[in-house]
View (cartoon, rainbow, N blue to C red):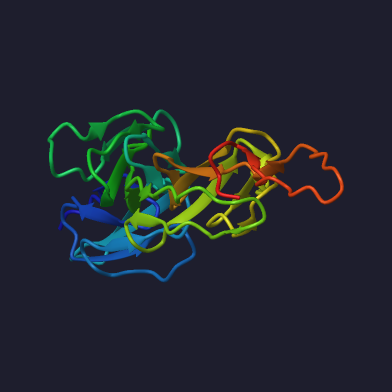
Length: 288
């Protein structure tokens, strides 16, 4: 009887994947495999094995023939590193690009394939490492990344990104105030109705309100107006949602001048009847 002639081939795999051993032995009836990593022997004709770490291992096949003669062959088995796909992206404001930060780990020249999850188009793809994409509408999008490392090993990852709408706010201007009266906080109407925050600025602190602040402008005491014309302040209110700023709205605060009565001196002789006193005001036309 002829002696066995052992032979086998394996596939090159990425760490964590199964290595398949294809037995091409002739005149063999039983087999013993040593995978070269210290694991237990196998007697399967065409075994599979998962190697624990990246390395080039020496696998040995011992074939036994019908005449109990044995022969062996040793072949290298290559286990390549497995890349890791990962990325993140901050919340983006509608109309601004979403910036993707690729944190993948791979070996050699790596090819990237992105799909940005925009169902409104078929061109929401990219092959660059750190792309950006501008979404046409607010919402939540599931983005996928597939990469192939220079070793031929591949990996995939997904990430959910949020595109925030831009909020809006409206406010009305109140009627004029007298000096020293209370100016109430404005009533703000926002879209959406919840989750919106505000900042404000005031171009004229003489009206009695500070230069700027956060939240809804607080009530304040109207400042004194010793001029003959109205004291005017413009309060600019900017809405925010998820860090995104919407278009500002403005409120005009008018503080009227405080009236002043002007009366000249009247000279009278003893027992003379005083004439009617005519009072003049500044501004003119105010009832005294």
